[in-house]
Length: 434
Length: 181
Image 1 (cartoon, chains in turn green, orange):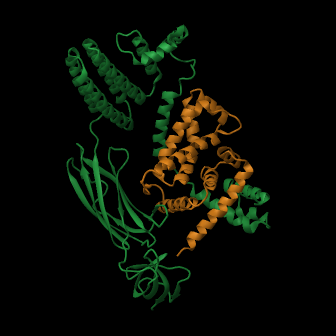
Image 2 (cartoon, chains in turn yellow, blue):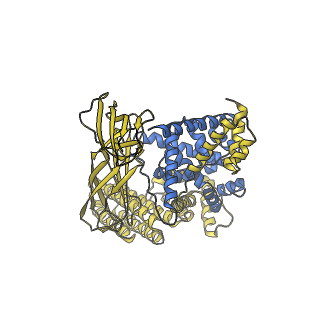
Image 3 (cartoon, one colour):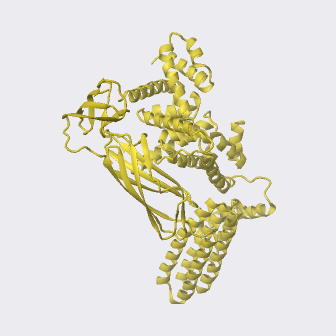
């Protein structure tokens, strides 16, 4: 390729696409290259314009929150800024002195220690430093849940050693950590609440399962305090989850679909509320995708009608109830499609994300056609696009198709077509009657 | 953006406002780049968040060695795209695009924009990986040739050649698809 031309092309992109100078004026400066340069610069302009999609402000804000929270969790540990409160400086100084006195190894070894062991105070000191360095409310709550997890692991260890009195003390600590998580979370926004609730539900299951396992193997003298600790932790987790704002709506979504004509899919959508609170529909998306032989999935653009009239914003499904919705999709036929997928997503008030279902279906196929077979038929022109629909049958019309008469909907046409290897029809001749 | 080098150094030192400024400055570019590369709005949104979280993790190790910050950030974005496709080949999920929402903006303009980006996404799939990257970095993300070169680890001359071949190929693809039917 010509290096000079590439430099010229880059200059054109810089001036016309980036700086917004006039394309014709730029091309006029290079008449010898205009013929090749013009279309490429037009392509570059088109690519730049097509790419100018604006992300939603809500997305930007939501991700900004996540990134800022992560920044506050991680980003300040490297250096000691000068303006820290005295208390923090004192704590950090104590830890540094401990390291200098050969305590670095001790800090690593303390991770597995339990109450009564020499290194346990080092472990607790480390946790206090982590708390001091954690500034966002969400991060504080998550940290307290993690500390609760550590206390639960310690309960398991001391119970295995038969130390019933330590089990009780640690159980108190679990309650305190969860109380601190609850306090931190009170001032958190709804999204962080949902994350922490999900974390609590997951951690509660894990922790209680761990303690149940230990209970079976624990020495007799530890069993009773351990049982009490399990009950207490269960209550503490449930109380903390309740305090975060109650259960979330939960929907099970199922869809059935069938292609009943080259341009029509019908089906049923069932929404079942499996939660404890009513589910209010905030939005519905339904989309159709298709795939040709050896190709990737694409969205079907020419959807003429997608109708699920009863399933709309504002519908309220009581807990424990299921509702059925019939739907129909009419679209410009896709004779080149080998597979179709019908997808639906439902947004429910009070939940992030959507509930969704996807159904695979085979495109409608004319039965009994043999590839290479010649087909003739006559009927009303229903649609004129890349593929014409004549008497309900889609035919591919190409630049090689001989068309007599003026193409117009609702006129009668005689079609001579051939069956393609994939079973679709390609028109050889179309004669349109006035 | 104000002196980027100073902002990056402040962010590395723990200044959250400096990092927020970098975030605001690069968010749209990263999002557009990812949208063109993965073709799905939902996936692009997820990956955009991942890029900034990864950048935050790796920020302490970033050094000004002649490569601009943009190139470093888009390398992270590229790696996210590679990971995405690696995982996607093991899944059978679809891109489930969000609808066009009405409201204060012109729905017709949004539909037109949506179709344009969809057409572009479909067309760039037929380019080579290197051509796709150049188109996405140069036109979706708006990077200069020098920044693209650093992000791709190539010489500027090689990037210009790729840019030329990519635009030619893209034009051929789009003209071919308009000619069908």
